[in-house]
Amino acid sequence: MNRFDLLNSIRSEGRRSDTEISNHEALGVSKDARGIRIAWMYPDILQMHGGRGDVMALLHFSNLMNLPCTIRKVNTLADSIPFDWADMLIFPPGDLSAMEDIVKALHPYKADFQRYADAGKIILVNGSSGAIFAEGTRRQDGTKFPGLGLLRMQLKGRVKVYGNDLWITLPDGTELLGPQIQMADVLLRPEQQPLGKVVYGRGNNEKGDEGARTKNVIFTHVLGPLLVKNPRFTEKLLLQMAVSAGLLPDGTEPADLPDSSEQTAGIRTLSDSDIRLEQESLDDLKEFIHKKETGVITW
Image (cartoon, rainbow, N blue to C red; front, side, top):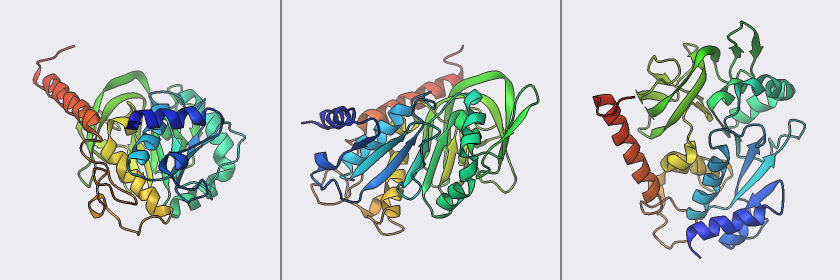
């Protein structure tokens, strides 16, 4: 069975349950073994711009890394949030019009989200879903609604939707590329660190910064789907979750582990051959962006 057949078999098995997918059996480990645990938040509401693909990327790359992984859907706003269970809460992109209702449902758990973040666990959010964790959002008509405030940023509705490619670099040198479709500009407080710096595209508000990050609360405009297109970033998130789960010692870096081309027991990193297609896609996108910058391609 090749690696994509393995992913499809796990996904098909998961369809028998509306709530949970696990790769434990495929990796030959006990279903009770502690692996990483991911809560997929509101898949039927936050269902724009490749969110489902991002969740499948977490499963696919964890398979290649020999990392047991369980993904649990939190289907409705009335469902309990598995703060104690999950190593990551992933909030895929959704329509900006849905965010006020989501925030209202989550507001009673604001302190729980803060404790979760303070414990070093990951909250990943992209696209307009960033409004959930912002301080607040001002619509074009002047009305406002608050966010949970874990990120010190404000959203301001745009007159026109912005769309283009986005290429950013993170402080550790990791690159993220993908499309950006933006309904609101993002303004960071002076004390709020951006996620990265813009190489090409608009980012938060065309001022050079992009996204926001406080510890492992991560927001970006990169869509596309984010985790499919940027496997080295995804790998870092998976390793952070493995540390959070107690599967790896604190401070473990990809260079500390063998890659998946070596048939060793335990958690591995992604080999170059594992992500050849993704890397070729990134290289093609970079070439396309360079052509736009030099005027070879015009709109």
